[in-house]
Amino acid sequence: MKKLLVAAMMLLGATGLAQAKDKAAAPAPVPVSTTPAPEPENILVLELSTGGEVRIQMRPDKAPAHVERVKMLTRAGFYDGVLFHRVIEGFMAQTGDPKGDGTGGSPLPDVKAEFNDLPHLRGTVSMARADAKDSANSQFFIVFTPVLRLDGKYTVFGRVMSGMQYVDAIERGEPPVNPSKVVHAWIGADGPNAARVPLPVIAPAAAPATPEPAPTAQK
Image (cartoon, rainbow, N blue to C red; front, side):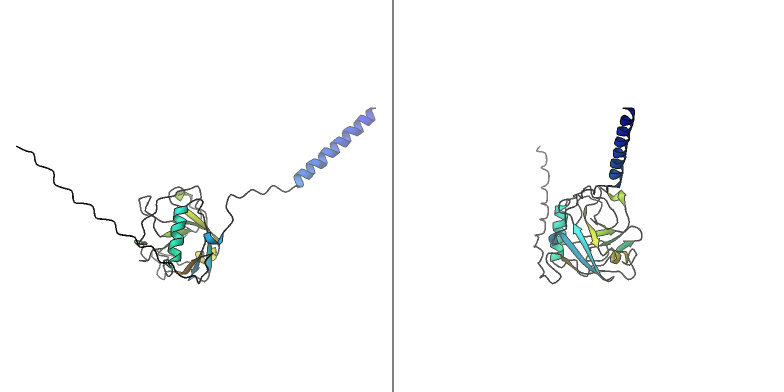
């Protein structure tokens, strides 16, 4: 009886050991990605003078107004020919200014901030702005290395999917001596030969009314 009991215990032990080995050999579960699958409508393609195309997945689920602005400007041909006017080694490359000096923007109104939980990792594409948080307009930058101190302070609207080597090759400088540029930009759903769509005409803001002089006291 004791021998049978020992044999049963040995069998159970061997079974448990085999199960433990099976569990150890089983591959770890693949984490579920929260990033939506790329759609051509939300792919920004930049043909750079550094030699190739950079494909950027935009995130309208995180920054809808900024993605819509970039699409509108891209479809109008606004980004064709713009320079990378501020490029800092180990930090980022900034573009999107038709003046080429960091002081310009589009004729459209500024966009309200859409700060989100997307981090500034290598390849992140984020909107540039002035001191005011709601001052983003047309300029954006691509991060060379993680810069997490920018998180929650600038609106991330996308990340490079492919072609980061062409971003790495952008000429450095503030401003660069021989600046690299965006040769041509288009939305993936449209293709590089799509007809341009003019920007909407925005009426200039009305000048503030001249305040009336304060009434004088009656004697």
